[in-house]
Amino acid sequence: MVQINNAVSFFLLVVGTVAHPGADILHEIRERELALQAPNRRTVEDCRVELEASGYYKRELHRRLNRVNSLRAEKGSTPLAARDIDPYYAVEDVVGPRSEVDKRASCVLDPEVTEGPYWVAGELIRQDVTTGSKGIITHLDINVIDVSTCKPIPDIFVELWGCNSTGVYTGVVAKGNGVGTAAPEEIKNNALRGVQPTGANGTASFITIAPGHYVGRTNHLHTIIHHGATKLPNNTIQGGTISHVGQFYIEQAMMQTIEATAPYNTNKQAWTKLDKDMLFSAGKAGGDDPLLQIKMLGSSIEDGIYAYIDVGVNPKVAQKPSPVNIWGPNGGVPNKGSMWAGYPWTKKIRSTLGL
Ligand SMILES: *[C@@H]1O[C@H](CO)[C@@H](O)[C@H](O)[C@H]1NC(C)=O
Ligand SMILES: *[C@@H]1O[C@H](CO)[C@@H](O)[C@H](O)[C@H]1NC(C)=O
Ligand SMILES: *[C@@H]1O[C@H](CO)[C@@H](O)[C@H](O)[C@H]1NC(C)=O
Figure 1 (tube, rainbow, N blue to C red):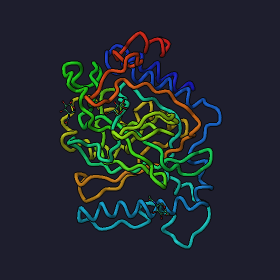
Figure 2: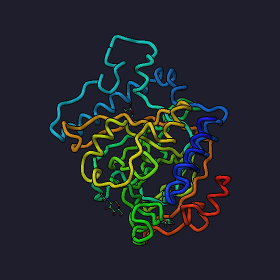
Figure 3: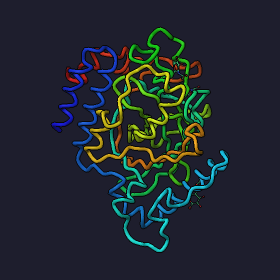
Figure 4: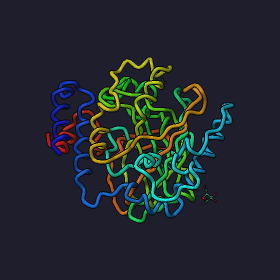
C-alpha cells in the first residue's frame, strides 16, 4: 500500500493548496486503499471458467454484436464481425479456456471506489439520460455478475452519472463543481443521471455522452449497483442495498479523439491523462480493469460509440454511500447531514480523511 500512501502525499503537496479538487481525490484514494486490502476480494476474472462453461461469454458476444451492428446500421456503417468483439469465439472450432490475450474481451471491475461529492440519489429510471447534453453519444451496456456465484444478476438496478462534456456535474451546486455556487438553479438539472434495470440477462443499457474532465481527475463515469430496491409508480427506486460503488474509464487514445471534438475542446480545465489518474492507477495496481470496451458506430467519432463492461459484485456487501442531494418532484434538494454537504473541505470530510 506504499504506492497509495505516496499518492495521498502527492495530492497533499500538489493540490493541497488548491481549494477545489483535493478533498474529493483524497477521500477516494483512502477508500480505494481500504477496498484493495479487503479480504476475500474476487473479481469477474475469478469467474472466467464458470462464465465460459455456462455459455455467458458466447451469449454476450452475440448480444453485443447484434446491438453494435444495429446501431452501426442506423449510421449506414458496415457490420462488425464476431472477432471484433471477442477474438476467441471468432475461431469457431476452438474450444478450451480463454487465453490471456482474450480475457480483455470481458472487463473486470471489483469493489470499491467512492461516490464522490456529486451523487444525487432518487434519480429517474430512464435509458436515455442525455437530456439535450452535447457530446459524443455513448450507448453503454453494463453487465452485472455475482462474483460469489459467477452468474449474471437479473432484475436489479444500476445507477449511472457523469459530468458533462466540459467537466461539470449537473444537479450539484458546489464550489468545486464548474459554475460553482454562482448558479443555484443547477440543482434542478438531472441531465446525465439515471437508473436502469439489468433485465432478464443481467444487462443495464444506457444512452449518455462520453464524460468530459475536470481538474485532478481523468474522464470517468460513476456507477452504483442497487439490490432489492422497489420500483415506485413515479419511476424511481426506493430501499434495497448497495453492493458496489465504482467508476468506469475510457482508453486514452479514444479519449484523445473525443476531447478533440466540440464542445470537449472548449474545456479550459487542466486535463489529467488516464495513466496519471491516481484512482485509476491504484485500481490497476490492485488488479482492476475498469476500462470500457468501445466500438465506433461510424467512420467519425461524432457518429457515437458503443461501450460495454462486465461488473463483478458481491450482492451481500452493503455499501453506505452518501448522496449530496436528493432528486424529488420539484428537482434536487440538499441531503441534510450528507458528509459532502458544503464540499469542499468541511470539518466532516477532514475528519473522515483523518486530516
Ligand atoms: C456543462 O454544465 C455547465 C453548468 O450547467 C454549463 O455551464 C456548460 O455549458 C455545460 N457544458 C456544455 C457543453 O453544455
Ligand atoms: C436472454 O438470453 C437468452 C439466451 O441467449 C435469450 O434467448 C433472451 O432473449 C435474452 N433475454 C433478454 C431480455 O435479453
Ligand atoms: C417518488 O416517490 C417517492 C415516494 O413517494 C418520493 O419520496 C420521491 O420524492 C418521488 N420522486 C419524484 C422524482 O417524484
